Every structure is written in structure tokens, then in C-alpha cells.
Image 1 (spheres, rainbow, N blue to C red):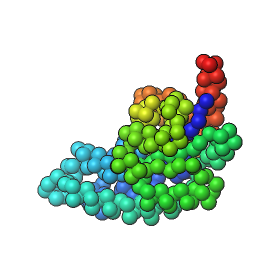
Image 2: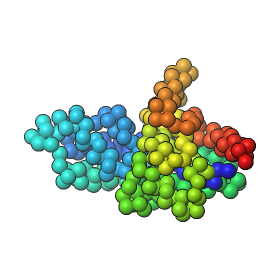
Image 3: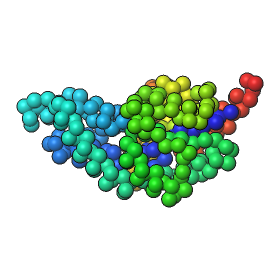
Image 4: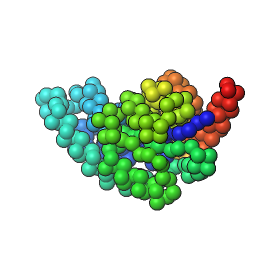
Length: 264
């Protein structure tokens, strides 16, 4: 039987489209004179933010812009300065982008009803998560355990360390009794590295990269095209399941529980 579900936060359970980190990354780099595209930011979304900034600084276009502006490549001090600016920006924007996505409470209440534990992993720091989880709690979403890379000596996704930490806390030895749900390829990598079942969320995901308004303005054919593009990305990362909405997770749990029952 499935004993625990581990959710990501931005783009999965809150912040439709995972907009807060994109806005904060753009501001932090713009303050350094560097222009970023959404694609630059989203390709490594889900990592611990220090690691993510390191990845962005390795992009060829970013290195080119940096060298043109400063006549040298970015160093560790530059990375620290951007990280500090990013943190300040994100702590501000998180207060604006913490609304629960549709279906989250309904899914959470189902999990509670059936005694399934709920935990979360994230690329946010503990300080950032204090803002997000407090706002989510006001809206009724209260996971049993909220884990950041700071709980596991800085080993952020795609490392399995946070999931393994949760397994120890929940006293669950079999990874097949756990589902990891996320909205980025890094989420899927994290889950696969931990040996748990992985589920990718399509609508409102960082992979789709659209706000609720932008998605709703698409016609039906355009929405289908967007969904299919995201599904193919998840499939390329070998996600076990891909769903449009978080509430579709209920069907997956019931399917997996039935499959486990048959084996026994």
C-alpha cells in the first residue's frame, strides 16, 4: 500500500506556473546587468537555489554577457552576491505567489482520510519555506513534514537525500510505498534516484511555464498542444506517471494499491 506522498511546492501545490522564482532570478541577474530568458531559468528549476544560480552562471550566453560587461568570467563572490539578491527578491515575491493550486486541498484531504502521510521537498531554503508553509497552512494545507536541503547537509535535488530523510522520519523502508509528485524534470530525477514512484504534474507546472491566465486564454487545441509538449518532456525523463491535475493522483494511488494487493 502507498504509505506516503512527497510533493514539491511551487508549480506543484502552490504558485501556478512557478512564477515567484522566475521573477526573482530575473531581478537578481538584471541587477548584475545580465538578461535572462524564462528558458534559461526553467531548465534547471527545482534545484537548490545556490546550485541553480551556479548552473545559470555556466550558460554560454550568460558567460558571454558577463565577460562583455566585466571583462572576466563570474567567480564565487559574484555568485554569492547574486544569491543574496535572489534571496531578498524571492522572500518578497513569495508573499504574492503562495496561492494553492486547484485540487490541492481535495487531494490532501483524501490522503489524510486514508492515513497516507504527506511530506514535501523543495529547492527553497528553510527561511523561504517558513513564508510558504505558513500561508499554505492558513488555506488548510499542512503537510506532516517539510524538508529542505538544509536538513540534509545541502544535498539538494536531484540528490535523493531529502526523500531518504523523509523515509527515515516516517519509518518507511520500501521506496515503492512512496510517491514523489513534482512539476520539473529535477523532481522526477530526485524521485528516480530514490527509487520511488514518480508523478509529473502538467497544468500549472514550471515545465509549461504559463500563468493561470495565460493558460486559460489559449483555445482548446492550443491547450492540448501545450499539455502534450510537457508530457513528452516528463516521458523523456522516464516519469512513471504524468497527470494533468493534482487530483488525478487519487486514481494513481488506487491503481498502485490494487496492483500491490494482487501481488500479495
